[in-house]
Structure formats: structure tokens, C-alpha cells
Length: 391
Image (cartoon, rainbow, N blue to C red; front, top):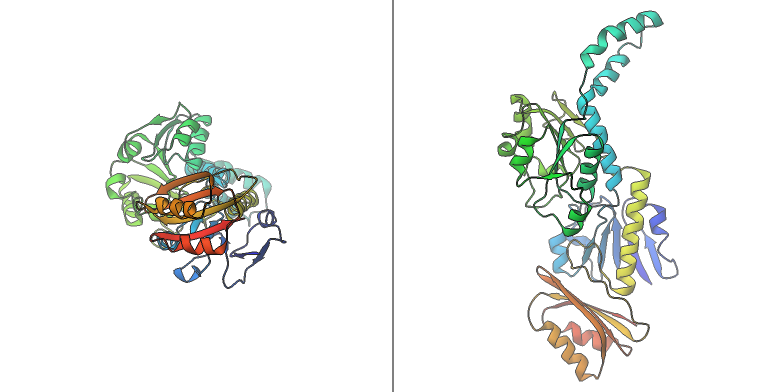
């Protein structure tokens, strides 16, 4: 029986994917085969012997020490796109809040709660509404930084609102490019995106390369009174630079899903308490997606949507066994594996080998059943991280 440690509240619709005859699920398992979590902060201490995989029910993995886990052969999964619609809708709320004085208007009306005379209240409201006058999104320019699952949906939403949409993504995938409307105007760099846009919405992951990528230099070329929306990650924005840009007028507003002490309470700043994926639908979508990925990996060795291992998907043969091998991405390891199989007269039916940076992953289907002795021999090959057998 495989043991799954669950951290945080994972939607039951996802957890129910695990057959309880084959899986034990609990929030209190000492040496699990896999971990499923949302925002719980993992450390190297969680990487106990025998841990094979970590599944994050969400897109970001900054709460997981990915590099250290990769070194131990632990596959880290996430669920890109599962919460995309939830985040897109919150971005829409941010767009509307930025242009229409909605929050200020609500606060003003709340201040009138002691007024009991309806006619007097109507007169006060009519006299005061002009101070909350806004402007329409139609005809404005929207810049989208990052055109993945969420960014492409935000770009499409901007087009539907009648906005002129500019997009920039330094690592645009072929899949994302196909998904993107031809009406989105691509620009060559971040500076061009900010210089052309009334509103910029951020949708890049938190990586060393994206940390504080929105800095004083970038904000310095922004249009006067530009609006910055950050529903991606706090780390990609230099809050000191944002504070200075708000003071100078380069930015009119900063609307974020990540409150920071330096910015709370400043004029022009609105923040929500990390609500991007906080919908019942998004939580279920993420839970189901991560469960299905983990099941396919634990039962078949396939890898889909990993942030640290290559995508490897090989249909299972109806006979024989499967061997899954993680190894350092160095020469001769696959040759050593095949040599050992040949010495044992084990015939290979099908195989798939892929690498990703420092690691490689192999799925090998063979005609006969395999045993722990073969597993040990393969595991002793220099450079092999771990070996799994599926009979």
C-alpha cells in the first residue's frame, strides 16, 4: 500500500481519486511515498527516505525546495492552468477597481449610515458622486507580462473588453503561442510593454530570474499614471521601487494580491489577502489535477506537469514489467542499464529516455517480471538516483 501525506485542506473531490484499497491518506504519516499540499512550507526534513513525489495543488512551487528535492530524485508536480479562470476573474475585479472609484464610493456610502432621511440621502449621494468619477476600460491599453495559462486568458479578456492588448513573454511556449489570439500585439521587452500600456498585469512565475524584475528601471519608463496589477507573485516586484513610482506619479495605482508592510495604507495601493485561487471551483480543479498526475506517476511511472523532471509518458504494455529510473544527466548510464538487462536475458519491449537540466528519467518496459535483486543492481550504477519496479 502506498502512503500519501496530505498537508493543508485538499478538496475531497481530488482525494477521492485515490483508491483506499491501494492508498493510505493521512495528515500524519511519518515516511510517506508522496506528499500532496497547497501552501504548506516544505523543508529538506520532509524529504524522508522513500519519498518519491510531491504534488502541489496550485501553480507556484516557491514553498518547496525544488533544487534539493531534485537532487534526491523526488519529482515535484504542480497544476498549471487549474486555477487560471479564478485568477483571471480576480484580475477583472482589479481592472474595474482601478478605473471606477468603486471602493471609495462604497466607503463614502458607508459613512452615511446615520442619515435616516431618504430624500436627504439621495441629495447627498447625487451631489457627491462626481468625486468618484472614473473612466472606462474600453479603448485603454493593457500590457500582459507572461502569456501562459493565466496570462493568455487575461489577454483575451482585455480584447473582449475592447482594450488594446500588448503581450510579452521571454519564454513563450509553442502551446501558449497557439492559444494566444492574433490580436494580441507582441513586444520585444518589458520596457516596451510598460511604455505602451495604461495598465500592466503580471503573470510570470516566481523564479530567480524573475525576482524583482519589476524594478525602478522598468517603472521609470512606464506611462505617467500607469496602473500595475500583480496577481502573480510578490517576489517579482521591488516594493521600494513601487513606493517611489507612486510618489513620483509614474504609477497611479498598485493593485496586488500580496500585501506587503511597506505598501499597506499608501495612497493608490489596494491589496487582497492572496485570493487568486480561493474559489471552491479552483480548489477542486487543482486537487483533481494533482491527484490524477500523482496516480499516473505512482502506478505507471509517467510524469506530466513536473517542475523539475522531464515529461515522460509511455503507454503501459499489457504484459511484462516496467522499470523507472532517475539518474544524473551524464553519459553511459543508459548503456549500463541496458547492458545489465542484456546480461540477464531480459528483452526490452519499449522504452523512453528524456532529460531536463541535471537529471534524466527512463521508462523501460520488459517482457518478464523483475525482482528486487535487479532493482538493487540497477541502483548500484554510478549516477543512478533511484529505481522503481512495476510488475
